[in-house]
Length: 330
Image (cartoon, rainbow, N blue to C red):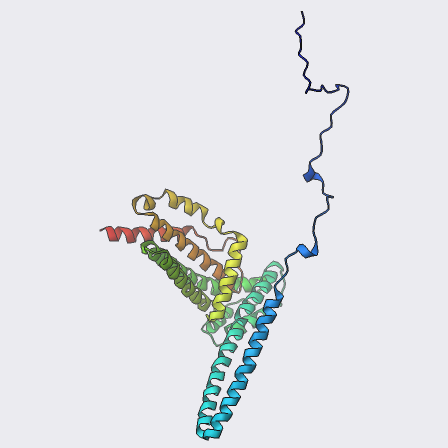
């Protein structure tokens, strides 16, 4: 006997003679219209910039008008008061003018280094000859009246006559900039170790931020001086902005992954405290910022395989923290 099948009112059998078709995925359709509209796009707040400039202009006009009125009032009272007030305004104007000159003038060094780096990349790739003269002229202008000028002249004195453009830059890289690199790496190592130790022994997170920021700015100043750049406040801010931009583009997670893994398995964390690990991490980031500053301040880009790595630096930071905590325990 054949088994009986109960009839299901909610089940409709498919026709076996009809071939089923698999629907295409919506993600495969590249012709779908984009639901966009100009009203939905992000609008820059240009009115804020215009309003700020207008307010600044208004304040300038009012301050000038009040100054002239006050000078006129003093001149009617006595000429000596007006003369004293005029000298005060002239001195203040000179200070503000010097600050503005430094603010805009000191940034020329970074623009000059950026141009030197771009030109150097082209000269190193193209086996040309005679094109490096203009590049050397810009480098001479950057180092004029600075301690780097005699170092540059000494390096150029040993340059062979038959050297082409690429060989000229490689010669300067070997006889000038590598010596500067060693000085910069030494300063980076010292500041990163000091920062790591200070953060490791500091009990307050706010104090950690202040200490690390202070050491980082001091390190940037020294790196600027090593490569012949003026360490002014706008130069610091511009350099720090460029560094943070590069770190954001490159991704900060790629920094010393192996060293962080070694640190996690190190006896340093298990025998001391997690605060030591925090100090080591801040020291690593300080060193990373220093290496990026070297790349931005160096007139000749690093050659392949020449860029300084974090392996040795990380070991030095961990060793310095371990030595400090072992000293405190003893």
